[in-house]
Image 1 (tube, rainbow, N blue to C red):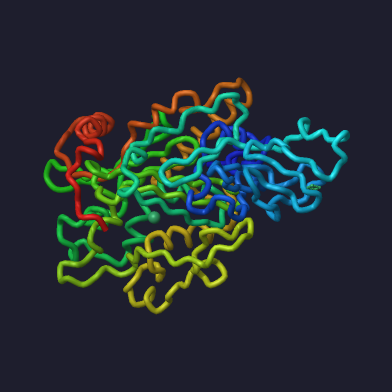
Image 2 (image 1 turned 60 degrees about the horizontal axis):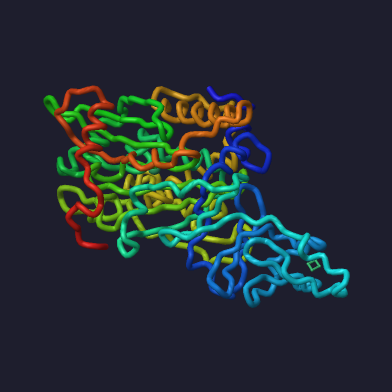
Amino acid sequence: MTTATEGRELTQIGPGTVMGDLMRQYWLPAALSSELERDGSPLRLMLLGEKLIAFRDSAGRVGVLDHRCAHRCASLFLGRNEQNGIRCIYHGWKYDVEGNCVEMPSVPPHRDFKHKVRIKAYRAVERAGLIWVYMGSRAEAPPLPPFEILDVPEDELKVSLIQRDCNYLQALEGDIDTSHFGFLHAGHVGADELPEDDPIYHTVTNRAPEYHVADTPWGTQYAGYREAGPGQTYWRFANFLFPFWTQAPNGEFASHVHARAWVPMDDDHTMFCFLWWKRGDSALTRPPPARKDGTAVGGAGRVNKFLPNTTDWYGRWRLTANPDNDWEIDRAAQRSGAIYSGIDGIHLQDQAITESMGRIVAHECEHLAASDLMIVRTRRRLLAAARALRETGVRPPGADDPALFREPRSGYLVSDDQAPWQDVYAKQVAAARHPSQIPLRAAE
Ligand code: FES
Ligand SMILES: [Fe+2]
């Protein structure tokens, strides 16, 4: 059970909050590199409850600054992105990507004090087509987490952003809750309808899996498991990685390379950032699911439809299906059993469910079950790490040693290995090959 107080500590991420301090220990993927043009319009960026602007200067460098001009707080979103800096249109003060005031043309030269003026600026780097921001206070930022997916060549990498209108934690918890798959996503599919080698065959054979859950160096891990014939076990391994990453079991373990970030924009908006390998195995690279008789399994749409981006703080990467149109639920499809949820698309089903809980779920109203073990464990791990940072200054996992984010993988497999679950996982990781060693599948 999570109390209301614990819920607040877990979900509030603004400056000075327990979890906000924890989040500021890590690099955050914040925008696509393609969202910023050299000398182009600045971008409104809401990140960890702070209103920022991002811009690309004449030299191609990215600046991420407090959106307020240091003079009288006019928004630099309206600013002119000029030769190597952004100029406030109120009195013309100009700032470079590091937040230094480099021109103060509205005061006589002998009264100029620009060298004393600086606005808050955060460090930014670009990698994998993303702009990453470090909002911590350390003089030297830690290295980027060396996720395996970041080794994939850029032309084999797919990166997408989708805004979700709820708290980062409830969005994230959808990824570490494997028992919903057999209902929300596949409630309309019977095991007898599927070929035995179908990736969801075992999921729909037994919709109430058992779990193992444990703390790991990078966060937490679960293994959902079911019997899969005499002496065989169907395993689904998945991870939570500090501070908001997941790896879900939606691909074959041996070649499933991906990472999913639930980046808090503020307490009740999240930017989902998904990096996946186009040539590895995943639900997105496989042919669409089909029954034995060749008919398509409904509700498995993969194309997310977006509204045009706007310049609003919450205007980027929004889906057309949203709370205002009931996520375009099709009651006829729900009633007929064509789609259990009535909502078409795996991502959209997850989005609808987590947004339907309200912007921040009332944790004290939940009744957590045995199938929520991973959620409980992850909340405890996050909270303990955030409190340790606050109370004793101990940095959370991976903040000092991001190398530990290298190992984890997720995915499913069938095995006759009777070893304890973490030994099965360790052996599979040891046998799993780096993307460069895996034979290429046809690209999408
Ligand atoms: S408020 Fe920006 S220059 Fe005056
Ligand atoms: Fe889901």
